[in-house]
Image 1 (cartoon, rainbow, N blue to C red):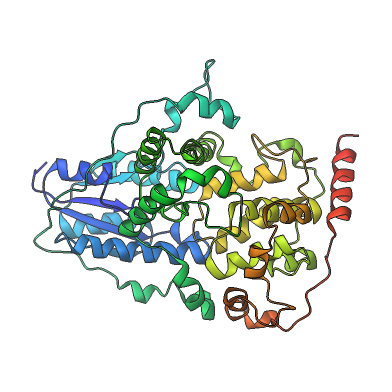
Image 2 (image 1 turned 180 degrees about the vertical axis):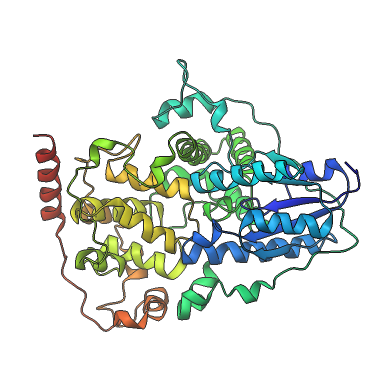
Length: 473
């Protein structure tokens, strides 16, 4: 094998130059490096906002590469076919990528690896998307953890090597293969008029992600344990948007959290626990891939959830018109920003699955279409947790009251006022923006009367508990 043959760096959810083991492995191999992003069969299956956000992340990475005399080759098509084509065009004899463990990516990657190796290409796979690889964490009796708390205890004191530095140079080939124009992919087209509303709320690229981490460690982490539950405050790091695309590494965030702990910042351990919660989701996705598509606990298969996504109650939930103010505020925040506060995610999930008695997969699909930080493992585990059908789940008989939750976590109605316009003579611009972002076919206006609850907190709780008890009777 010629030492000067190019190496293809196949980029997926590692859109960064710092702490990127795959990129470093490509550089160590010697020879030119051809960074490639493919809008492939897996990426094309993603929902509207995640696919659009991925394209924006690729564009930011392209700029960072150009600053170092490199470039990003964009292609659209089947992953294996495209990689083979680029290898033929460039004479590349090796392909390097970062390991992903969610079922769709894992299946794609195994197929690609086997085929490329049969072609005689060297395949180099490097970990780095999570803190701790799933095959390295086991219970004392062997096997994987099914409950978060012992999982956390097993990894919290593990040594984790320091993040890798950003390479000074990225060797470029003398001739570049052709690249698509990102604009031709029109990833924003399905957003229609909502694109210009949502786009300003994104924080895109590695440099922005590092700035976000630095600001949080300087000003937010100390109060994180308490502030993270207050939806009217910016009390969370918001780094999930960047972590899901690898615009910053989990290891970089981990070491920043450890340093904050050494400085005595009280919320730092809670931040580290949230990073490990993300790992826990990916470990479960690796060990039990069915978590992304069906009930993790099979005994829930016969539970009488509504599975009709067109049901009027589900439609009201999607449109932020349930008449339950915490639920509606959170659903509108999602539509305007592509984000939803973590407390809101729990409340809207509980309301859909328990008060509205609708299947968690309906919520999973809606989030998969609308979340800027969508992640296949975290989304699945979160929904199954709140529904009661998953590992380490909130018991089904724990039904969050969305009215008292608003009283507890939004006492001054800051969050509600920010997102609900109806009945206000001078609504917040964000609340008004919701009506500019939504499809015109919804026929909604800020001048509408705010609806009565489609299912009240009390009636929903009673119906959910009756269904639970009947299931176990």
